[in-house]
Image (cartoon, rainbow, N blue to C red; front, side, top):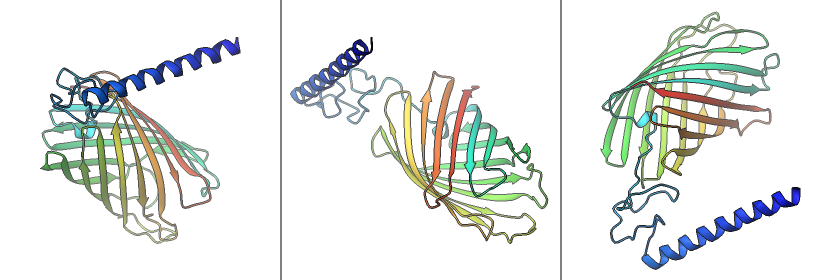
Length: 279
C-alpha cells in the first residue's frame, strides 16, 4: 500500500514536471515572457503571475485586492485569534488573544476600530482599543504613500494606563502586477503614568516584500523593529510572514507568524484572521 502511494506521488510529480517543461518550451516558441500562454506581441499585461488565469490579452481575469488597498466604499469586519510566547515573562510565558477590527474605506481614506481580549496564566481582560484614520496619496500609478493618526484608548485595565497617540506612515511600491515592496515608520506618544519602570515614547519600523501567486493568494515577508516603552527593556527585532487567501468576493483569511531574531529566549506569535466584506 505504501509503495503504491509513493508510485502515485512520483507519477504526479513527473506529470507536473512535464507540464511545466512543455509550458516553457511553448513559451519560448511564441516568445511569451510571463508564461501565461499569450504571445508578448499582444500581451497587454506582461508581468502576470505564473498561476493566474488570464484572458485573451494576457491580463488577470480577476484582480486580488488586499483590504488595505481597497479604494471604493466598503466596510470590512475581521475576527482573529492569536497565540504568543515570551520566555522573558516568567509567570505568563504564553498568552492567547482574540481581536476584532472594523474598517471603512472611502476613496483614498480609511477608518478603523480595533479591540480585543487576552488571557494568560495570571490574568485576563480587554486589550487597548485603537481608533485609526489614514490617508493614501498616489504619487505614481505604482507608488503610494500613506499618513495616519491613531488614538489608543486605555481599555486594558492596569494602574497608570492612559490614552496614547500614534502617528503612521507607509510607502508601497508595485514594480510589477505581481510584486509589492513596502515599508513604514510609526511613532507613539506614551502618556501612561510611570510606576516601577521609567517610560519612553516608542517608534517602529518595517520593510518587506510580497508576491501575488494567483488571483486569490498573496504572501509577504518582512523585518520589523519595535522600541519598547520601558527604558529597561531592549528593542524587538522580528522576522514575520503573512499569507492572505481570498475565499470569494466576501470572505478572506490571513495567517501570520513572527519570531524574535535578536534574543536567545523564545519570542514568537501565530495569528489567524477571517474577514468579511459587509459591502
